[in-house]
Length: 225
Image (cartoon, rainbow, N blue to C red; front, side, top):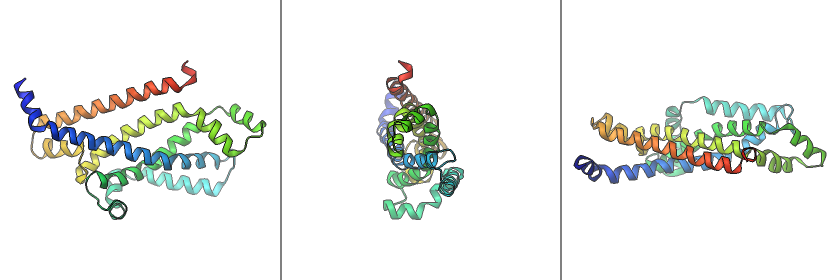
C-alpha cells in the first residue's frame, strides 16, 4: 500500500494529464473524421454502380483517394504531414500537433466504414422511399443515415479505439499522451511500473468506450427491442 501511495504521489498527476491528452487525441480527431467522412461515405455509395446517382468517374476518384489514405502507415503519415500540421495548427508538437494528422488519417477509414454501414440498409426501404417520390437528399437523410445509426455507432467505437492506438504512435514523436509515457518511462528509463500503468489505463479506456457504445447501440437499435 505504501508503495502504491508513493507511486501515485510521483506519477499520478502526470498519468492523469497524459490520460486526458490521450482522450483529446481520440475524441477531437474522431469528431472531425466523421464530419468529413460521412459525406464522403455517402458520395461513395450514391455514385457507385447501382447507386442512387451512379457516376463512374467520381466514384473511382473518391475510391482511389480513400484507398491511398488507408494504405499509408500512420507513422509515415504523421511525418509527411508535419509541414501541413504546422500551417494548420501552428505547431507539429504536443496534442495540438497530433490532432490534425490523426483526423486526416482517420477520414478515409471512417469514409469506408460509413459506406459499408449505409450499404447494409435494406434495399426494400430504398425502393419504398423512391415509390413515394422521395428525392436523393430525402432518401439519404431519412432512410440511409437514419436506418444505419446502430451500425454507424459501432463504427464510431472502432474508430475511437483505432485512434487510441494511433495516438500512442503520435506520442513517440512528441505528441504526449499515454504512448509517450510508455516509451519515455518504460523503454528509455526502464521504469516498467509506469509503462504497465499506461497500458492498464489504455485497456480501461477501451473497455469504457466499448461498453458505452454497446449500451447506446442497444437503445437506438430497433431490432434489439
